Image (cartoon, rainbow over all chains, first blue to last red; front, top):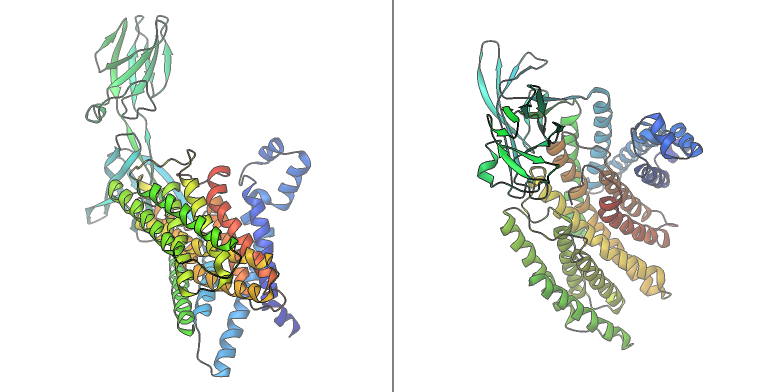
Length: 320
Length: 261
């Protein structure tokens, strides 16, 4: 009975909250999830030892965090049950707001454990035409990928159009954008990023073939060539192109030695003794595939918390 | 033009309030709260103008967030002043005016760019709009509660102290649900759509949770006799300091998913 009283007490809740505040605060100043050697290099060996022993390197998965969180779960559960029972027994007008909030928090903590145990994710970079087979044998094929920029070069929009099909079912077209993921049964697909794997191939005067990725440099003995893709971002290059020219993927080179200059080029052009033999634009979309069994539980819990907050706010305002 | 006018009006309001406080009687002025309201209108015009220009709600960078912060603080202290003419609250209203002035001055500093730029894809979300607006409305209540809690700790007048503690409690009770909705509920939902996970223990998220825990502790200490006065006032002060660190400190000292500004 005494233990029950202690476990459901507000004082215990306040103490655990105080502990979680202090330890979480400390953890934000320590880089999380790095390897052993990182902490030994970054900190004095005694400090590094304390961090690694206590689990501050992965604080939110450590016992220092999980045990007090478990205690607060028990505290919240007992306190909520006690409150509800007392209100029913006393036959007073029920004020459900705080209890709904508490139940929502309890459910979020449970969903956190479910997510920790079962979440799987992976990122894939694919080009138009590439296919991925999902765990339930659905075929996902990238039909097209669009990347748009504002005039200042900042990203404006990433959009992946994908075709989904399964045995005996026709293809269906879906669109994935940032903030607009696609849900395929238990899997959610997010627009994660993109990669520019474009390349330009040069042939020097000796017939040697050289391939450059964006920003790569080669010294041919006469000149230094650097492949810079056409861009509208004036902060990145020595010169820019108009937005309507950027889509042509014309390659710009800085030539060192006699001074830097930018020369727009296309396939077949010659610069001195160097010939541009090929320009290959390759843009890959990055899709993040997430399976999270706790996701729906978390959403319902958040709705519950929001409901509890609104009810509490309204009932307090009415009482005033 | 509108922001400058807002700044000028806030300065005038502060000067009038200081004059009345130094007059050393209990008389309150009849103008400064209307000046605060006028300042909030000019700041709101700034937000509306920027929103039209960027074709999205202007809540996507530090400058715009500070404008909202200042605006809502001005509105809150206007309502405190209108609802009560109690002299104990004069310092709270002056402190709130000063805080709004400080925040807006910070926004106008060269360290915080005020360029009007349409948002990048991650920020183009109505969950983000709800997240930021509700969080800052909640934090505005916390800001004014910081002033009243500090005043309650500094005063030797027992009656005044009790009134200020009650004011602090009312402000936090109003701000807490709004902040919880904005910072934690809407913020989590936005994070899920933007990054694929409701919670990533990102420094900004962790500090928002720390701030929320402090105010949760505050609300619960109001039920504990020994802690409900001085200790809870200290929590209200600490909570706002953490609020400021969550906003400024994390942006500039710790990096993470929220590094957009």
